Image 1 (cartoon, each protein chain N blue to C red):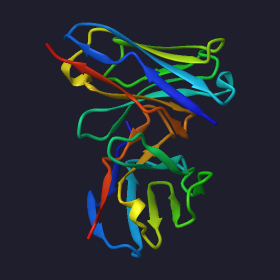
Image 2: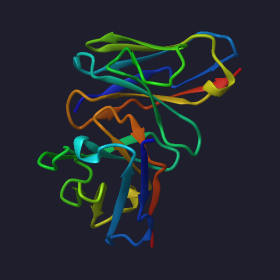
Image 3: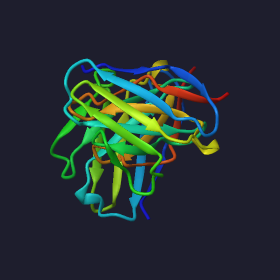
Image 4: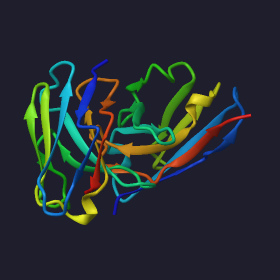
Length: 115
Length: 107
């Protein structure tokens, strides 16, 4: 069974940093592209970042470019999102999702940016 | 960026109805269009990929059609568990973009 489990969310002050993790199981992680997608409270879905299966190709939404860094460790079946210079508008549930079609999603982890 | 526009934003329907949601892309995305269902407090679930391919395990009452710029999600014989919010998403070019969502409510 495919499972994606996010962790690392929490309350952080504006300008602070957080590192999200996504632990994958039930499939060959190293063969799949991965994404981070977020959803602000009461709002729609917003794609955040993409990483290819090898990690050689990476894309970001303009809203996070220069502040967020996506990475993966295929030996540990894990995906990461390093979030720096956090802003109030980054407050959201962050999901990791498998493949370009986002065929499987984790349960999400809540990031709250507030003083 | 490619803009995805869904209509309607919300609709009310009864169990057994057929529901149609449309999604329009601001430029041609071939068939790189996915549909998701999201229930409150839950992660989205992929229903349709590549515009018309049914994801494994998804009931056959869900169907998708279209290519280029205009796409449709149809739910035949609406069931109680189908009341949710539906999103389209293009995976043709980054940034992948989502429609604003269509909330399907009980009439």
